[in-house]
Amino acid sequence: MNVDSRNARIGVSIIIVSFNARADLVRCLESLHAAPPAASHEIIVVDNASTDGSVEAVRWWRDVRVVELGLNGGFAHANNVGLAMAGGDDILLLNSDTIVPAGAVDRLRAELARDPAVAVVGPRLVDDAGRAELSFGRMIGPFNEARQKRLARSGAAEALTRRRGYPDWVSGACLMVRRADAEAVGGLDERFFMYTEDVDFCAAIRARGRRILFTPDVEVVHLRGRSAASAPAATAAAYRRSRIAFYQKHHPAWAPVLKLYLRIRGQF
Image 1 (spheres, rainbow, N blue to C red):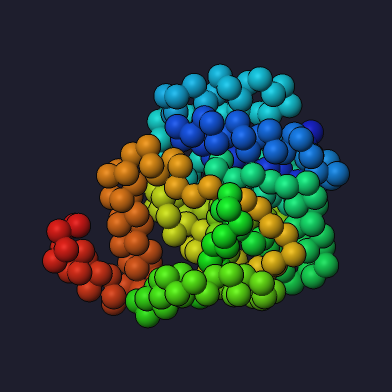
Image 2 (image 1 turned 60 degrees about the vertical axis):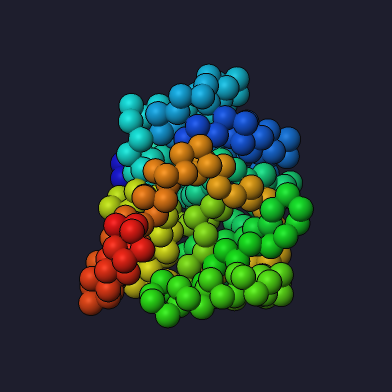
């Protein structure tokens, strides 16, 4: 990732990938501008060939850098495009369907600064009604996936997300990473078009002996699934492909089992 030397002193680069989520993207940018981080920062919006006027809406903010991709190459690819442009010491990967309260970005940076061993930090994510999302967990695998789904259904998220900890991964909906660590692992793996790329990214960083932190002391609103709702069939297919790719990479012995399971359910 080649970084423009003019941006070398930026504290944090905020990268937002957008696809046909104009209203959410505008709301996200409004929240960032209503209470901007105290740290020097830049905002980069990478648009995955939206057709809903997202790019035109973003251009209202002259301080936001917009990258128009000619086609939708996926979430990981778009984030890597943003990473290649970013000049910040820290990088915030941020979904367009988030609302960032005052001070949240600076507090995430403070968490990184507190412990040199921590490479990635994720905040507590809540919906617009304040309900917590289980936005971290153990490494994806056949048994851990079942456990994660069971915990999410059980209503345990409220209690679990009140505890500070060092999980295997945190959600890419709002994930801050040191630029040096992002560069060391080559960014996000683009074989994952959409979904599981954040888990894989955290796994690559942990493989270098670095730590992932979840903090309940920073809270960000996440209005989940807005981009996915615009194309549910395509999103479901992308999710299945990413799961298969993830198992082929991390659990190759289980990949045929997953394919068979999906085939039996008529999903592959």
